[in-house]
Image (cartoon, rainbow, N blue to C red; front, side, top):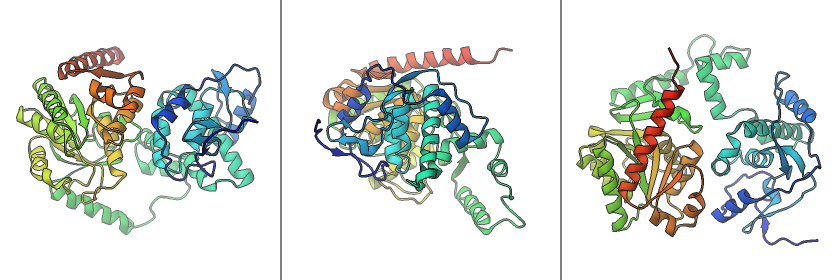
Length: 437
């Protein structure tokens, strides 16, 4: 018997609260190499049978890749602070991506944990093998809920998700069409319900006050945000939306060093001179330096806010916020008068990543929002550029530097060269994928 150090990450199989785990822990989990085995954890026939019972008879999954899996990799079987894994009774050959999909499904009741798992393993979860594994794991979990009554609150997250609902609405043409396809009764009978009438009044009031209001189905909604699974359902704006603009996020610490501030100013000025829009979050430090330098250079800047668009945070940036609304663009995914919260800034970082072609992290510490944006940028398939000082000073950055799409730059000129190279590659790919007449 081997006694492993540490304690379970959660007293339950499910992560119901946020679990603080160091980057080293996640890195070790990713590096775990499974030993080859001929032992079978599940068969193709069993996978298809369970998936059809859960999601309909039309569902047939062809598993193209098998690998050695733990088979029950939930939070109560994982130890921390040093990684350890318990209960290997179900190990054997299974669909590739089973373990990551299991951990993801058992994280869905806590959005922060689900987001962290997805950002760490987006290359697995977003692959065709990962999609198959998630369906298999969700079907297995739904059976467990039905047969044993375990974790009934997990049933709804397994059956539907916001990204899946968005995809259905975009395909059907309206949310009402999706409702009618899923339910027998009409969405509205007779007069329009008062909450819907009140929503219309509010939207009209916001627009009368000079705010843009954009749903993800509107033509004015930034098309690049539809490419990410955290796309905000609505956006508020002040200033000019420019469809198809080339934009790059410049982000970093609120308590930046003088060297970091100078780096951000020099980079923002160079991007503006090249006709590239500078995106940032209107926070103190690097954000403020990047916005101001872009405007001073006669360029365009977009501020993605972590509060409602009628709020100013920090208060010291009130004049800068008005200047951006006049000469650039303010965006917010929160109700206009919403205050800042712990969760609003990570959501803002995901939107910033999705809006731009790349993210540049100028200076950041262990708890910086820029670190979150670097992770979600990788998840979105957007290039992430780290300065050499960020890599030198942070373990999380050193762990990311070898991931696909991550680059390291020593000077603002290095960043500009990388951005131009990546933009040219995007243009070539768009040309190759364009329909031929």
